Image 1 (cartoon, rainbow, N blue to C red):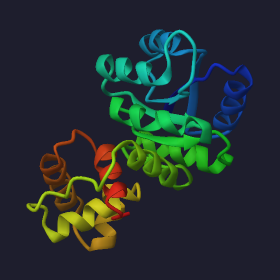
Image 2: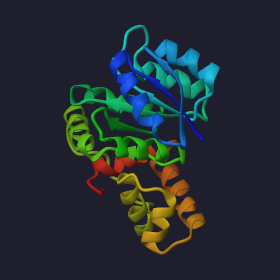
Image 3: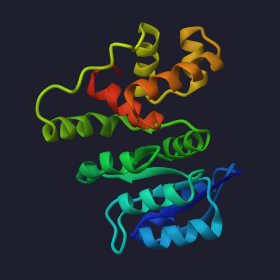
Image 4: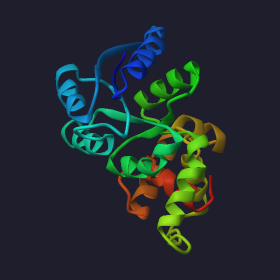
Length: 212
């Protein structure tokens, strides 16, 4: 059973998400929060597996809440809920420890799949947001991105490109005809060479470099 906490300052959004997720037998909605501070309290009380986190909220916004929750409860995975006018916040949320991002108006099956994938350790990078996010990142950082480390092997670049598409280890292993253990080793090497701590940050680098 996947335990989910929903955090959004719009009650109608919370209730709509709860209705969709409650229809999935493998998902249990364990609570609702109206802001980041309340999400922090509810996380301690309910111990969710996944938090659906809005970004623009009073008291404590989604970026601040993501950073605090990941610091205190590192096993909890956070899936950011975003709209197009909130794109500028997504990169900060990912850097704060979010596992990915999802459009608020995603269809029910996409929402359920994103929650399941996030709970399973995969990163959800909604392609409808990824392009605009990368445009914003490039506007904020003039010039070309820093080159990828020369120490990345050709196979590691292939794995990095698939990380940029949000693929999990099993899918990468099947696509490249490798074992999952080998893929895990490649991912670990990639993170070390890129100087990042998780797959989502590596995926964003892949997107910036046009690999995905």
